[in-house]
Image (tube, rainbow, N blue to C red; front, top):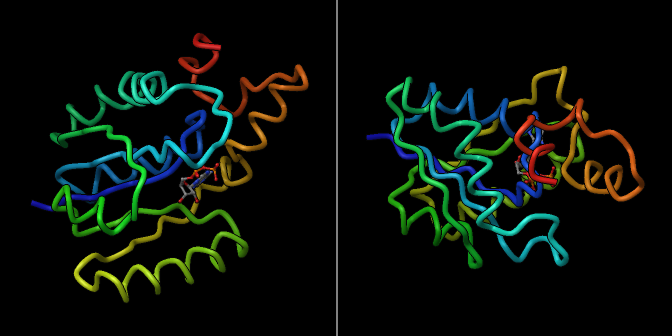
Amino acid sequence: MRVGLYPGSFDPITNGHIDIIERSLSIVDKLIVAIGVSATKTPLFSFEDRAAMIDSEIGALAKQKGVELSVVDFNGLLVDEAKKHGAGLIIRGLRNAEDFEYEAQMTAMNRAMAPEVETVFLTASPDVSFISSTLVRQILAMGGDISPFVPKVVLENI
Ligand code: ADP
């Protein structure tokens, strides 16, 4: 059984995250979406809300594809979290060269700590590659319209 762990802050989940999750469902038998709860100091959504939104957005599709989906929170080292869940794959999305620089370094350090855990990268689909949760939060704080960037469930929960 191929178990993948997709970590992030998902505050809020965006169309970019959904694209990565949907594509991940084709490469794993079980997907753990791990919400880093301490990553955002003043979160827009609680862990529970973020988890519920991910589940409502992806749950049905995961079921349809026969993939077991679970959403967990985590605080510690990513490789420890992967090992805890028996995940041999860490899944990350790459939007641009800046993501690559950061991710390549982090991956190398993770591999040094846990060589049995492999990191796989999915390049962002062009239509969502510019979206980031950080910018979505900023637009929202300034009263802008975030509907092009996030699923409906996020708009319903604001
Ligand atoms: P953000 O960087 O938007 O705050 P996260 O920290 O939750 O989001 O990111 C979790 C993972 O999702 C990272 O691997 C990140 O590169 C990836 N990701 C975020 N936004 C997108 C996007 N628009 N397209 C593809 N991958 C993305």
